[in-house]
Length: 126
Image (tube, rainbow, N blue to C red; front, top):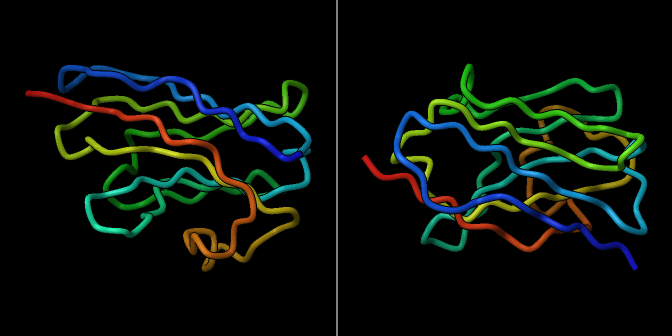
């Protein structure tokens, strides 16, 4: 079974930093396009950051310069380093994976991903 395990999350003050991790089981992240999404109170998943099989990254405008997506193929783990947290970063975050390379234009299209990790709540207070 393809399972993604998300860890990290919690309650933080604005300005703090937080790492999220997404460990894969039954799935080889080396050959997958990977993304972090956030879930807002409406049933929409918004792309935050993505990394493709060539390690090309993409970020939502709201997190550029603050968040960094990376992966460790040896550990089969995806990461999201969240720096300079803002209250508007408060959301449920989850990771997603899809085998193969997605065009960057589509890496924030949640429907194209086939494996999802259970979300973790990040709450940022001022």
